[in-house]
Amino acid sequence: MHSERKEYPVEILRGPFKYSLFKPFVPKKKALELLEECFDSGWIGEGPKVKEFERHICEVVDNKYFTALNSGTSALEMALTFCKTIPQEKDIVITTPMTCMATTIAILNVGLKPYFVDIDPFTGLLSPLALEGIPGNIKEKAAALVTVHWGGNTINIVGLSEFANKHGIMIVEDAAHALGSTTHALDGDSAIVGGWNAPGDFTCFSFQAIKHVTTGDGGGVSFKHKKHWERSKPFKWFGIPRDERKEHILGHSSYDIIEAGRKWQMNDIAASIGIASLSDFKRNLERRRKVAAIYDDYFPVITKKGDFPVSVITSPGSSYWLYTILVRDPYHFSESMRAQEIEVSNVHVRNDNYSVTDGFTGGRLKMPGLDYFSEHAMCIPIGPWITDDDASFIAKKALQFGK
Ligand SMILES: Cc1ncc(COP(=O)(O)O)c(C=O)c1O
Image 1 (tube, helix red, strand yellow):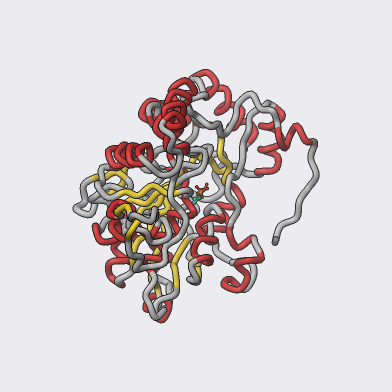
Image 2 (cartoon, protein in one colour; image 1 turned 90 degrees about the horizontal axis):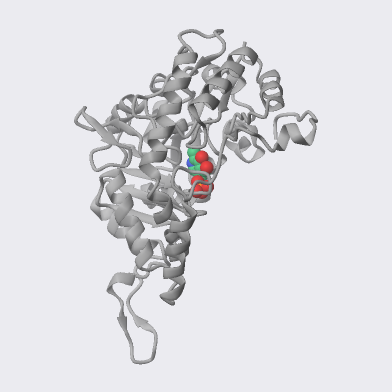
């Protein structure tokens, strides 16, 4: 761990806060009805509720090829496993250090090597310009490029897909924050993140507790290519082709396993909660966009380094899982905002902060975009629980303390 910790009173660190940054958002009555159905059916493992949940997500993301899993991290690990070439001629994954540690952990867990590239200080996203500086031998050995749609923003995707296509590298979109975001389609039009015409070969979603749609814990992958989707179905559960299995007189099911899979499937309890959560998704997304529009009226968009407080540049169809601003002194900002019962956070810590990446970074990275963004970025509350008045109050306080 490469950062030191100051001590603060527990209420400043943990709240409770009047204006929370994150909340699980599930219509309770609907969830309980679906859970009752699930328990009454006598089947709580992967079954009809998971299939129903998958059908709903297919509609949300406009893609026929979606597989539900038990976490966003499993989704990344599945995508990266499918990107691996055997024997491992290509064992590098080009990625951003400014993300949840899950992105990097997934790369490490499938036996690939992260190669971190600088981010754009004005967006917090992988910088297409920084890709230009990647040495030829790294590009040749790159199996995948993992981009993270920070807060739901996808502004960099055109540059990244041009780069990846030119060098024959698969694109994995870490869309843990970006369910419902729109992005650039392959034909230059707009697409839904994870949609059939979106750039990613694999788009990985998280349905963890505080995401737009939650299953408690859960995730899933939408696939560009049917063959990867077909492979995912047995792969998610030991390699068993569950849809094709036949009952055997001895009691076991009859099937062949041709590839050792994992134990990553979603279950019907989680899917029941997810279906309930999905019933409020569109309203939830609209509300997030409305709160973002209120904030946009208060914060100027960053145009040059040194301006504070400003909002980062976002993409028009963002899902706004986060609303990120850049403030002069995040310590002063956080202390002051929290004293007003407003929860604020940098949410994710640059991944070179942790010793586990030292073998790939040689210690703390020196990257101007990353240094700037991680020294100034803070997220303010956004979500259906924030009213218009709350948003104005929070913005005014942020303008005061972010200077
Ligand atoms: C950017 C990003 N990627 C991946 C994940 C992992 O998702 P999960 O917690 O569902 O495994 C998260 C979790 O918050 C995330 O923020």
